[in-house]
Length: 240
Image 1 (cartoon, rainbow, N blue to C red):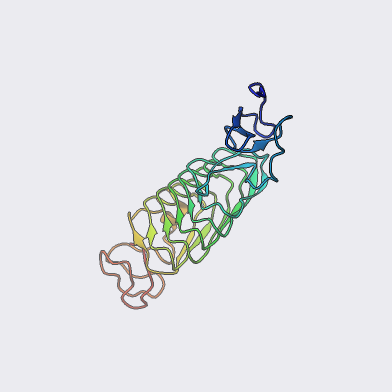
Image 2: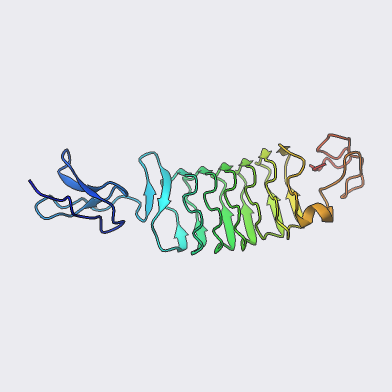
C-alpha cells in the first residue's frame, strides 16, 4: 500500500488522503486531486481553484493572491465571510450564475474601489460590503431584489441608484456612508426601516427623494401623506 500520510497538497498545503473508490489522492481541504507516484494520474483539473467551491455551487473560501478576482461560472452563492478582510482584492467580476452574496462576504475589503453587481444577483446579504472604506462606485443592475441590513455600511460612495427590481431595502443599508449625497429610487421599494442612511451626508442634505412625514415632495412640491412612500402629485417613490 502506498504511504501518502506525509504528502501535502501543492495548492493549499492541506492534508492529502487516499480516496479508495477512485484510487487517487485527494486534498481534504480544497478537494483537488493530487498526483502521487504509483497512483493513476489525476484527471484534468475541472475544479475552481483558487476558489473553494462545494458541489452545490457555494463558494466558501479564496486561496488566491488578490488583485483582479474573477469568480468562476457555476458559483451560485458566495458564503458568509468568504473574502472578508482581503485588502489585496482590487477588482471583482461576478459570474452569470451567481444569485446570492452572503453575509459579510466582502467585508473590510479595503482595496475595492468599485463594484458592479449584475442583475442575476438577487440578494445582497447583511454587511456584505461593510467596511469597504475606499469603495466609491457601486452599480446595482436591474434584477437585484433585496439589499439587507448594513450591506454598504461605511462605504465611500457619494451616490447610488436603486433599480426598479429592488423590493426590499433593509434597515441601515447605508449606515455611516458619510459621502453619500444622492439616492435615486427607480421603483416602489419596501423599506424595513425609515433610517436607511443613518449617519450619512445624505440624511443631513435632504436630497430630492427625502422629505419629512406630512411634508412636500422635494421634486415637485406635491403633498406627501404621512406614512406614505409615494408623492400624491408625481407618484415618485419617496422615503419619509
